Amino acid sequence: MQTISWKQDLPQELQVKVAEVENQIAPRLEEMDQVALYNQQRVLRLFRKHRVSEEDLVGSTGYGYDDIGREKIEKIYADYFKTEDAYVRPQMVSGTHAIHTAFYTTLRPGDTLYYLTGTPYDTIQEVIGIAGDNPGTMKEFGINFKATELLDNGQVDYENARKVLETDQSIKMVAIQRSRGYSTRDSFVVAEVAKMIKFVKEINPNLVVFIDNCYGEFTEYEEPTFYGADLMAGSLFKNAGAGIAKGGAFLVGRADLIQAAAARLVAPGVGKGEGPTWGYMRDIYQGFFMAPHTTVQAIKGSIYTAALLEKVGMEVSPAWDAPRTDLVQTVIFHDRDAMINFCAAIQHYSAMNSYVDPVPSFMEGYEDEIIMASGSFIEGSTVELSSDGPLREPFALYIQGGLSYEHVKLAITNAVNETFYTM
Image 1 (tube, rainbow, N blue to C red):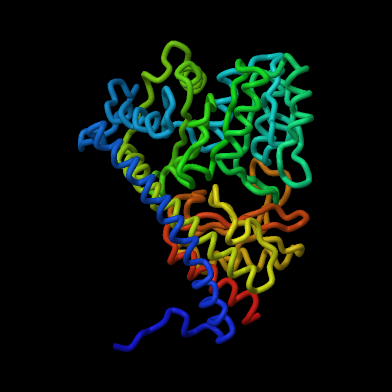
Image 2 (image 1 turned 120 degrees about the vertical axis):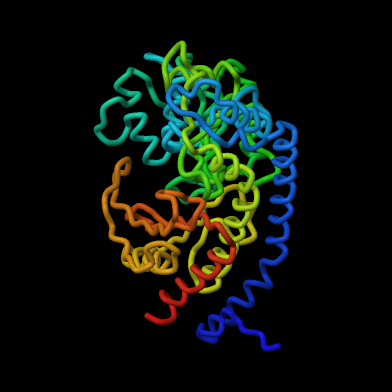
């Protein structure tokens, strides 16, 4: 029977490069398949342990009293992340919203939020009040902010961090940003995060260690909460929702902090007891069940992206054979127009709005113009294939997500063809 190749319409030179990449990355893809299998086993065991059934998927209205599905999914999240409690709600509209809620579990006027991993990314800077001119920031409430910038090699500056933590008694929460955000440093693998948690707790065990885990769930065999993180946030339209959950976010951690987060989000005295889930529970359950598989599909796509773009001479981070701990693949263009053109090419090979050309624009929460390709079924979903970045030096495009490895492979290959071979 005749074999028909998906590559047959590509230039011969690009076909050769793709074939070389496929052989090159095969062992890494198999390693990631093993991560998916292990984490899928853990999720399946929890669904069986908690006896998930049809009635858990119904949801609730009004106040959301006695929502058995909501209570059960929060037990599943707590079990998976090995924490005392969890808060999984559609009322949290994004990872940033969950992070903002987490900050107010601990911080009060006069307290200091301290970032061990350098200044956070743009939207969190707006929340803190060190960027933008917005009402309701932490700065407006008299909450202070400090950060120790990372070393030139992208690692934590433990020497200077120790000085800060030992001398500033106003610090109540230490934040660790696992993903690179809009920077070019490597994301932190769980082993590195575990080292950071240990470092902080040895200096002062009473400090609340918070993890911004967006893009990080299900990427490794372990999670930061396995190593004593007190509170951790993530988004349901990133990894944990698998492109199925239509919105929402989660917090996992110590029971008292989760209760404080619920009081902040809803009202003191109400807390976790209220919060309708409407018709979303089926999506939240199914998204969590599919998350190990979908997350690894996206990572396999990132590995392919790094290898192919490196093959055509682009500067990428992380490299194709580097450890993977999130969905983000950075490509450095050092040129505004080239970055815009490549981003547009990814849009052209999206399932949704493939006929659209992305236009640089200002977005809420960002200081610079942003270019973004996002042909996703769920608006803003970054577990689906997207690319974006601020239009500032070094003109780094952040490519993330992909519901299937096949889609990423097709989109990136054709974007390379459109950008480097047919212009």
